[in-house]
Image (tube, rainbow, N blue to C red; front, side):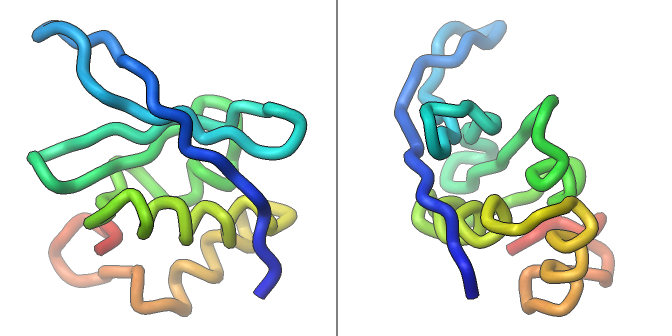
Length: 105
C-alpha cells in the first residue's frame, strides 16, 4: 500500500486547564494537515478543519499509540480522497460498527 511521509511535531495546545502536549501532522513541503492530542490518558485522537482525508476518520477517532496514529495517517494521506479513506477504514479491522459510535481502535 502506498504511504505518505509525515512528521508528528510535538507542540503545546491550549486548553481551559492550561497547556497540554499535542502534535501537528506535517506532510510534504511542511504542509500542516491537522492535529493529534491525548484523550482519556493513554488514547489519542486526530482532527483537521482542512483535510477531508483526516475528517474521513469520523468524529473523535481513538488510537492506542502515536505509532498507530502515524501508521494510519501515512496510509490515509497517500490516498486521493476522503471517500477512498472511508472505504479503506470500513474494509479494515479499524472500523467498529457495533456500539462504539464508529470509533477506531
